[in-house]
Length: 52
Image (cartoon, rainbow, N blue to C red):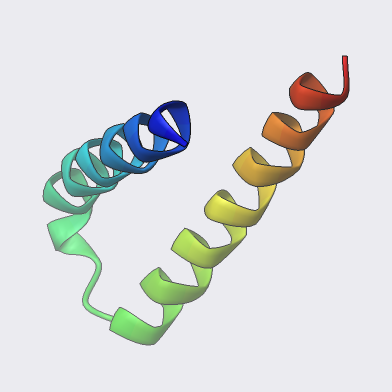
C-alpha cells in the first residue's frame, strides 16, 4: 500500500512538471488525452514490472 501511495505521489509530481512544460498547449482536451495516454502507458509498464 505504501509503495502504491509513493508511486501516486511521484506520478503527481511528474505530472505537474509535465504540465508546467506544456503550458503552451492551448487545447486542454488534447492535453488531457495525451496525459491519459501517458498514464495508461506507464501503468502498463508498471504492471509488466510487477508481474516479474
